[in-house]
Amino acid sequence: MSGVKIEVPDKMTFFFQDGYVRYRVAYGGRASGKSWAAVRGLIVKSLQKKRRILCCREFQNSIADSIKHTLEENIELLGLSAYFNSTKEGITCTNGSQFIFRGLHNNVSEIKSLENISIAYVEEAENVSEESWQTLIPTIRADESEIWAVFNPKREEAATYQRFVLFPPKNAIVAKVNYVDNPFCPSVMIEEAENLREKNLAMYRHIWLGECRKSDENALWKYAAMIQPYRVKQCPADLERLVIGVDPAVTSADTSDLTGIVAAGSARNPKTGELEYYVLDDRSLKASPNEWAKAVIALYVDLDADRVVVETNNGGDLVASLLRNIDPSVSLTAVRATRGKILRAEPIAALYERGLVHHVGEFPALEDQMCSFTGDPKEKSPDRLDALVWALTELACGANAEPEVGNIALSY
Image 1 (spheres, rainbow, N blue to C red):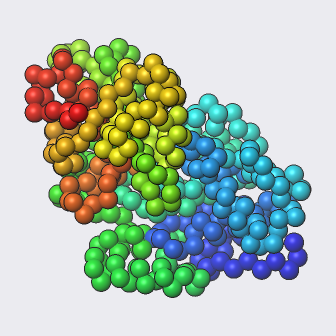
Image 2 (image 1 turned 90 degrees about the vertical axis):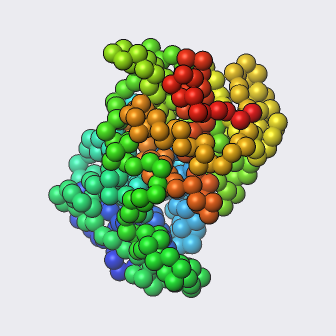
């Protein structure tokens, strides 16, 4: 590979440096070149000697969700295709190096079984929960093994921000990089950043300068008061009901919304007799209609759920048909939103205020949407949050719950 020239921002040359560093972390705003610098660093490291490289993220429902395509693109751009072989399962190098791709969420046993990992690269690390970090870090235990991460900060409370920015570990390089540090930043991105700075300075600082989002006083959910105090490690074994809420996307383009897929259950508090709710999983993903339908049914089967509640505003009867084509026996409720999102979300937020909703573990991406949602019509549709609201509304409106939450009504 002699003669190959690799250009990256000066602040991120540490991804290429020799010598052992346990943690190499880059964080900051958009268009800084973090991901490309890290990916190119991985390519160089894989060519230097035989290494087993784990590329992971919190949510990965298929290898298409991984950085595999980005690796392939950079290998080709660098003129190194002759040294690599890419298959559906992964990427291998002529010297024996191997790239494997895994999701962290709900794959504890698989992650723990991985051996001889030289480098674990965590993309979109802002969404990684503390539980996932506690699983991953002890797994990467080969001599001089390293953990790399890149992320765009969301909130100071997030596990990744706490772990690497506020309280960085020993033997770590942690660098904040932004588009202003990237001499290769496309002019169109610079224009977008400058335009936002003129219109909304706070949002500019968050998106383009990588500053944590400040808590919005108008947000319907408050992390410190409504989510964190009631978080639990496990739910009761005797759930009365378990449902899956779905807010479907009808396309899977890069600009499409995610399909929100959130599972929740309900159980009586043995001391008070009051119905309480447990958020069990967030399997939201960007996928084709057929792919997200398969993911919904897989979760329905995995959890032995009672019902799937799916919004049909986008897609109509086709949405329900997709699910029934995969599993004709699925217990399904199709709902149509006739009220604004804020009106549907307020009764659910009231349950959180009363301490009746418990998150079983951490769901950083979902919780970020919750703590950012004000109901402003200009806000981007909160796909994960919509799925959560449908699931909890179904549970709260069951026959046993109507006296407790009488102001919630499903719209069919």
